[in-house]
Length: 324
Ligand SMILES: [Zn+2]
Image 1 (spheres, helix red, strand yellow):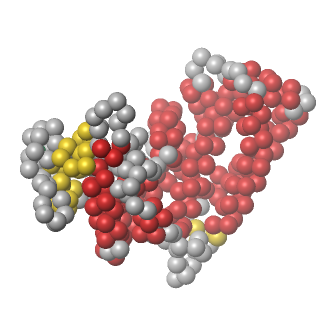
Image 2: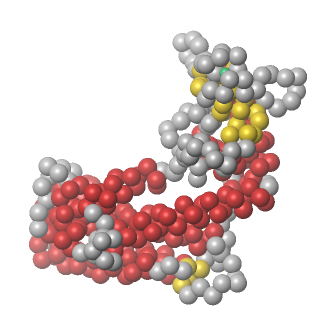
């Protein structure tokens, strides 16, 4: 990597701070699965969730409603039942799955490139020390402690990369390609690292306190400075092979990825418990929708109230920003 393309400390800390959000999935903290994803068929406004009235608000009584024109309103139970049917139908459509797969691969490719670049940056110990200090302002780690703090954050980047590489390999699994590395090799390297990493992490968590106190007590628990340094060296010797493997671009997974249509959540009744597993169901809904929008129309005798509106070619990217 040349000087020009090298990441800055700010870019790296931004990536690391965004990791927990990415790892917890794409859904924000919602109670009702379609919150923010439905539009009024009459006026075009985004629907909001209207909680049930009363002292003890029964979630079954909540509704998706238009606060703009006030003419569109439907109970969450009715809407969720229709949503599940729509999601099942769409996810059984090969064209939807092809589109989902290529969007997912593009997102994975982008994130893989970004996180791999972070690990390249982290090969430099001075970078690790700067990272450790930047992410623990106030704790003031210096010397080896700062390097170790930085490495600890890069380990979370590596953990995320293992997930991404594994998913990518499963999504592109197929016998026709002559790929060189079997995903089992990555799992073994990950295991060798975490066998050393987790005891140390647990020790640090048990011995609460500031970063500096934790480190001092961990040194004592391991029997002294020399023993501590030896443990860290052993850990690093397991870390680097894992990082090397994570840089490898072409992986083979014998097991293909599970298709969204096979998610057990689709076997359940979405109207019975409208607040159950909203994140997982929302993700399925977003997969089924792609860039398309869903509108809720007025109540009819027995026809569906939800309608798909295809995304215009020049749509603003603000449509379904969490699209998985
Ligand atoms: Zn409206």
